[in-house]
Length: 123
Length: 149
Image (cartoon, rainbow over all chains, first blue to last red; front, side, top):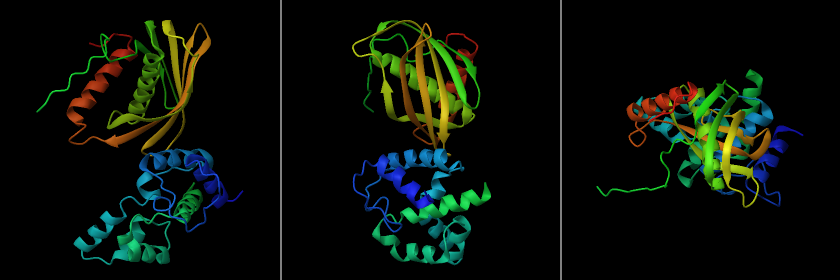
């Protein structure tokens, strides 16, 4: 099974989902209703399944807004600053998140896949 | 400020008598119970697991139980006598820790489960200077088999 398939399996089990509503573009918090406790459990499940080091703040983009503020305060462009913080995100994905950040939590399933892929390369 | 009084009916809140082994992946300890309800045993297991995570994080972060993923124990039975407690770290992120914890009596498993703990930085609610010293001292006493205050 590929990374997306494995992630979907873990999320469905954790959130007790019976159907398979998950695509790479599914929002983890906004659509699936994942709460902070679910994310903690998801983090250890990812560590167990993929044998990678998991940094919660990075995989779940929890400091994204803070980094935007930091970039502004430092007089730097948002996108390159964020890219330095989240090397697993593409420039396109960063731009997409910045555009929609006011609409609520932007974490998508594909962001987890990107993180795992990136960490696996470094492992 | 209003004062909240909690009376557990117990002599103390440290539900461990000793920590006999500890490493990055494993911890073991002991506790003697006097016919107490099962949830006291559950609390002992949770305390053992939490001390393991504090040990792993060098007592630099506040650790607490987030969730009992599952736990099995004999229905209707209390906890009485000398028990051996042990725990293994199954997986972790930088903030969450998944452990299997077990309580045995006379080499037979009495209670066993998987627990999820979280570690957060100390802050104004969980004050480093007070809590870090407290937990380090209790762990040190337990590890040397000396009963804490």
